Image (cartoon, rainbow, N blue to C red; front, side):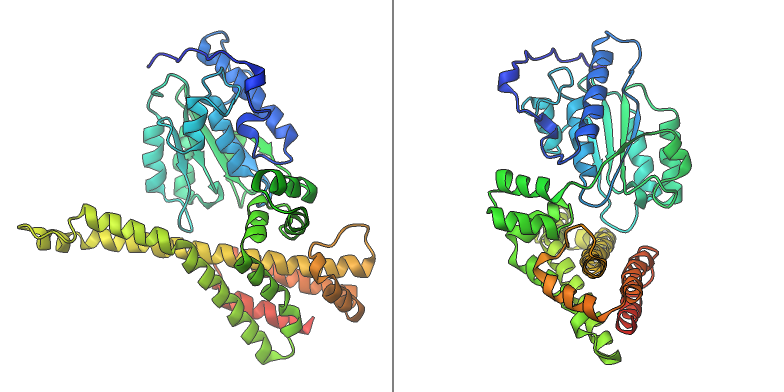
Length: 413
């Protein structure tokens, strides 16, 4: 095993207040737990503690979308590799390389398609069993661990049950429900629950970190429902705001059966267009890089036959890209459904005069008018129809079928 790097002298006045955890918004308790674990891990590396104490080899980060599951996992990985005895300073070489995704001992698994295959997981577990090159920790960060296939979950379980002494697994999932993560994996991991950040906290981040104007920051934070990434997109992307406006116009468009099918088609097509735009650049770059590696454009002897023999690799790339596009489309559609569900939630809030703020303040007039026309039971049925559509798509029902059924339910009330 490589020698441990010596600690770097720490001057508190020269370090950021939150270090690697600065982007983890509204998660004070989680940060406290992770800092304590990183400090305990540093003592193990230094040989001053016989056991890890607050540290363990397997972690699950749970929380609603936008709460920062992957941010927390990445920050914790950086703290484990921090050159300043695990304090997660954010300025040392270890922290910088982890946060930048280039650290030799930290691997990030981000599923591009609908699932993480057993082949991917077996290869990852095999590499994770090696000794860390810097003498600290070998860290595996699995985003969207709820997309593990059953076989991939079993492969991971074997590694978690008997982990190498310096390997840490960090899993991110919406919850610890068996639909998201297997009971056996859950039982061997320490859970770090994250909460939805408040709109005020998100708005403050947009203003201080991204330079967003106060009014726009407050609006975007409320409309994004605590999702920091989406709030940033809404604040800075007019097209994202336009797509949201189109979704919130759906309830007014549902005047008959034909209008329901038209609205469903418009929603599906908008999600497809957003997905194509989001992956177009990466798809083109991947294909160009592969063709170059295979000798495309070459004029030497055997160049043409080499490209013909590479047809299988190109087809495999196209398959992965189609899978990624499908995932991107479903993610875009799900964001639209979340906005639509929030509209019906606002109608209920207005009807019942609940002492909470509406999510879509700029559509308060529309939701208020709907509250005057619909009975609470009818609004609740509409809200349930949107949530049911999300569940059906998550269970691989064809999106168009699920959305058309939802639109008809919304029209009927």
